[in-house]
Amino acid sequence: MQKISLEEYLRSNSYPGRGIVIGKSPDGKHAVTAYFIMGRSENSRNRVFVEDGEGIRTQAFDPSKLSDPSLIIYAPVRVLGNKTIVTNGDQTDTVYEMMDRQQTFEQALRTREFEPDAPNYTPRISGILHVGDGSYNYALSILKSSDGNPDACSRYLFAYSNPVNGEGHFIHTYMGDGNPLPSFEGEPKRISIEDDMDAFAEKIWNSLDEDNKVSLFVRYIDIETGSYTSRIVNKN
Image 1 (cartoon, rainbow, N blue to C red):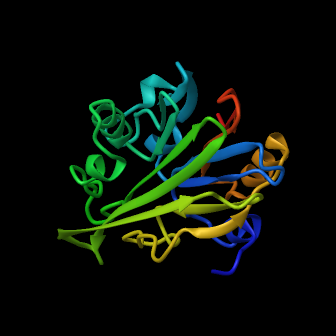
Image 2: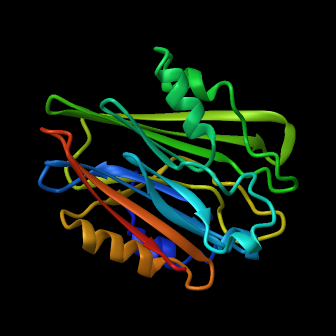
């Protein structure tokens, strides 16, 4: 698969929806992940990311304007031992709880499907990073309706062993704006990762549509020690 410019790809799409990036820094020292959310409605835009233990959660920026918490209030990032879970919904909790009971990432996601938000049937996208003892691998998943048919769920898992330095993969919910919103298609996009976390975060944030972007989270995890640094950017 040809590597694409994440910056150019995002600039060309006014509404990629929610997106997950996972990869490895060019110096080979850090596992990298990023997660962003966007919104078209007042309810979706009325959100911020806040720290929650070792992970993050969404919360209403103005609680008085929160009309429906379902599907928009959740924990996008949770940490279970040497595993960092990143998803676009409450399946984060499903993965965390089932993996805590010795089930696999794939087994956990087999109990879930796309979101019940007809007519979009937004895909559930999920990622997991395994970092420990100097080794690193990751996986991405998407659960989507069968071309808009809510009676069938298509499940895709993409696993990456021994990731290449300076490379990563990007998956998101929508191919672009529309009514209904068209679900992501194909494999996760192969992209470049940067050593500088702040520069990488700034590049992603500045590439997202100004009207629709809501929040961004970026984390760099030291592959040798498991320690990490994070950055949160909120529009509100």
